[in-house]
Length: 299
Figure (cartoon, rainbow, N blue to C red):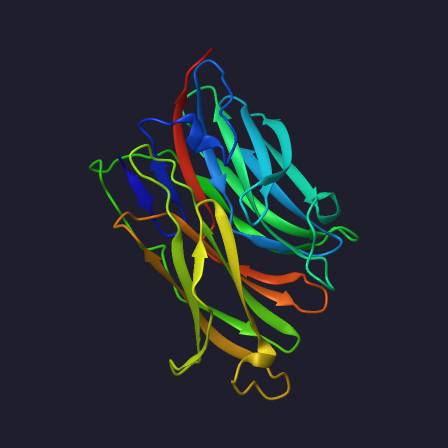
């Protein structure tokens, strides 16, 4: 069983896949000779009058079926869009905040969600490019963009390789008056038949430029397939700001606690949020998790 957790991408190849493992991301489409990926994007918040857009580019080969989904903090699918991406073309899927059936945060109506896209291929896997944007509905401007990531087929390796450069990375961000840092952690459910999903313990620490701890979240317990967020308001950070702006530069680091020794796919996103509007101003973190589901037999 190969698992890669590299700089931006995690690809887990499955030898077998039980139907129960797919409840979180829906059952596979039964099509002759199909293979599939599931791409999970980092969590992001949507304020009023915003939408999230997922764009899939198919450089070559046969058409790709793409199913884009929005999930709430409990991992439940709340929105679905379906489309076909032809060779040499791209397809995008928009989900407006107004169309997401979730109660928002008080005062801003912001919702914290994450997106996933299921890609189904009718031939050998070809490179695919995926990106995510947050768009202001009123004028169409892109507020935040996740740089497009090329999703490649898994190749090479000894069969049990593990690379861990993508976990717990230090993130440096600047937060100004009227803003907060939000760290959201996603505990991916296990897609591997020999492993059981388990809750993950997590907490987040914030440091100043000299390495002093200035804030820390409570310990979070995150069930499989769910997300949890921790907020750090600029006002509450005991840190002198830059002259004229009161902006504070901080280092943010998540810490994880696993019950077993397995390496669980955990995805953290880091946002600077406007307290007044609930809109995300800056989004940082690994680009996505990618799970290779293998071949899907025909009926």
